[in-house]
Image 1 (cartoon, rainbow, N blue to C red):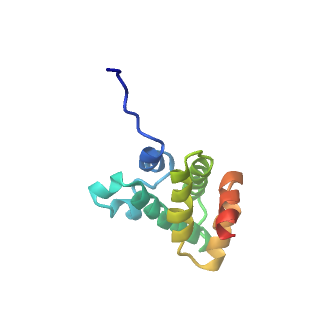
Image 2: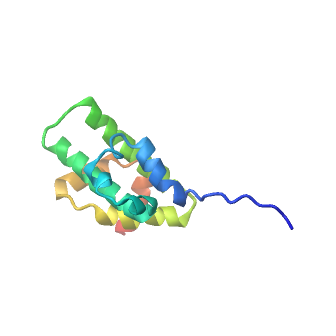
Amino acid sequence: MSDFIWQKSKFQEISTLLVSTVSGFGESPEYQKLAEYERDISGVVVGAFAQYLCRLHERKQAGENNEDLDSAITSAHNAIEEMASSSESAILELVTDEIYENLECNTEVLEKIREHLNPASLALYERWKG
């Protein structure tokens, strides 16, 4: 009998990626309102992240301007770019189905989000929009 090591896929680690790399997301109301068991479900966490992303850009549009907000926006878009650069189709689907489809912001905020997308995430967005 051969030995094997069970490894998590990147899909299973998306929640950890977002909480550990996106400034303020782990402490955000969007993440904190999730039940403990929901925090282990990638799609649920990514959906909460989409709400967080909208709120960040809404704050910026409202005129708030500080280093913490800029850092949070940059780190959020870097996380989207990392996910959009994945070779795993399940992760790409998280970006389109749980982020892009759940961006419930006004038109101006959506445009700012699109403007901040990096090359892979922008290409995926354009394909998704069709």
